[in-house]
Image (tube, rainbow, N blue to C red; front, side):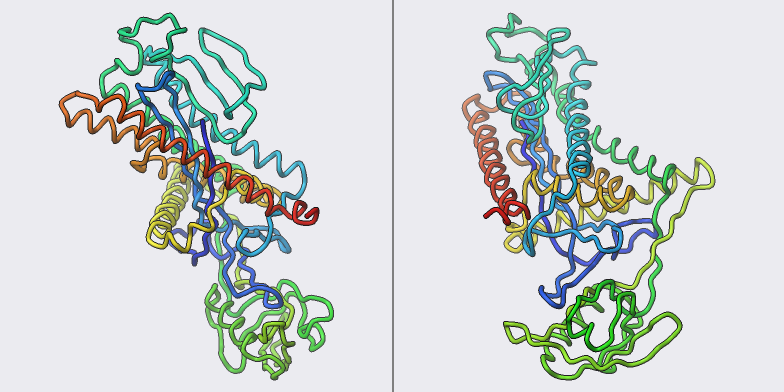
Length: 455
């Protein structure tokens, strides 16, 4: 059983790798509507497999939390929306299918890791499911039931350890619960290993097929859009202009701080003339703009702003260079994930409200799919890395929680915890995850743009 959660958090991008797509792409602030908050597009993934010899039927429970602070490049005019700012937009049906396909593939890869680790060791496996709840379709092969279930919240691998209907003796050495500690550790950790390998393969395919984006920064802040009948439109600002300075404050380096500085100046200057130094093609000149007054008393000029950056593609010249590029990108994305997870725990009170579920994951993935293929590759890679990293946390219902119980067993000289205690630990974790997942599914669904319009 698996539940998927996602955390939309906002943070400045890092620059640890020259090849990382997760930089300043598509950072847009709506001066006319929203606070100057760098928009972040994605996710915090946590998948977990869970084994408990105390259950009537042992199974691996997968539970995904997504905590992405990474940014994807998108075509001009596209942006990712956080539920903290506005609703989610699923976009075209095709892009939704692509995002759902990516998520399903990641689930299958994770569960296949557990399944193969058990199967290759001769351990009995009884079920392999995508989703949970009522069965929609199933077939049986080699004493294993493969099924697709009603609620697409993840998947599980089932073991007949305490299933009286299996006909397998309780002391059978090929039941997972009867295997040595090392065998069980291999089975439980195999899902994480599978996702790490899958993430690297995805990046490697991206490197070979489309290349990796390289960011080049330029002075000033770009104006991608000017709204009709706004102060900016009225006073002569055009899409594509670059703001080099505001009231004499120059911006030699682009970035989220430059965007925020301009937004702050505009917001503090309602109905007061603001002098902008503008770059337009080869020309540089000054424009005076008088911001309109917002309903809350702040200034607005009706533009979108983003860091003044451009991306080009770098392709490997040979296979060794492809491996080197892939390695750099993999470690860069992994560093972003680890930093994101760290910040989530250090600032949990601020980030908890931004956790969302599978509906949000698909909504963000659909928007990534509509933008370009680069974003979809990295969307899939980051989901895998997040899923692997968070899954190792020693929490109930996660792979890390199951591994922690096995370590306790090893420390106790091979003596397992009391059956009732182990049941309580795991069942409480599973129940919490299910309730949280269902709550987030409902909340994220209500945040969808077309649902908001109906309401």
